[in-house]
Image (cartoon, rainbow, N blue to C red; front, side, top):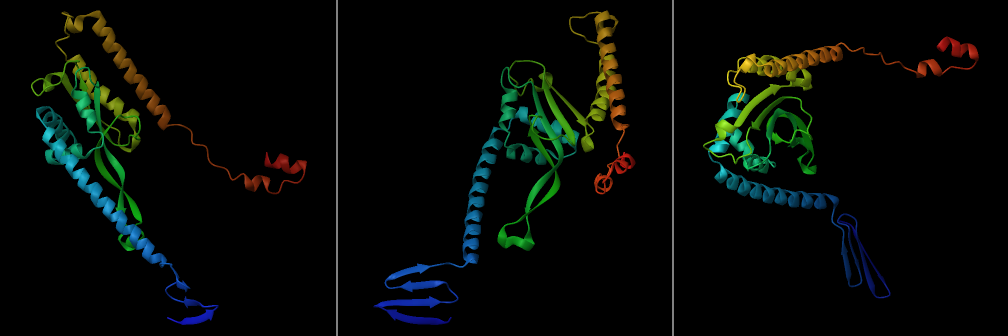
Length: 273
């Protein structure tokens, strides 16, 4: 460090060329190097992350303690349908920020549906090569999460639970009053997924249904037949719409600049047209 001292009117002035430290009289001003400030902010950020992780762990254990037969029923259905272990599904559920939707679904006159998406989502990962500045990489990774179905793009598999009664859902009645289903919309093919679900699962199930409640005639009843005809017609319309969309005309993008750059007189406009 090169230091120069000057005495002017009794004041001592010091200039330090490396550390950025200036002394004028009895006052001291210290300017820390930029790297020190960055390191301090990263340390604080690390401490914040540790605190958040600690709070998240406490929340997870509290939710784990709430798991009962109703949750086990949902977990087993999801594990069977999505090909995950029950332990993986449980960890996902208790870590989900929308966990309270499950309790709202179980409550009397609660939510009519409970949705789960299983699809690629962008996960933030710390970039090891740039660890000092805290930069991250976004990598797609399969994830199961609870959703209302209206805020996230649907690009994978949807698993859903539908309640058939307004009574409170308990461990003893969950298998009777809650229906489970899935449909696949990989790559965002929602119409194709819905068409397959209705034509290959729902319609065959309805047509083989023997018990229609108060309708004693069952499939022979004219209203039941009309209902099944309407569902068949809807699926046919859905299939036609999907095919029209898939076969839509794609217009080639034109480089307009090449046509208008050299327009100078009427004949040029005619040629361009």
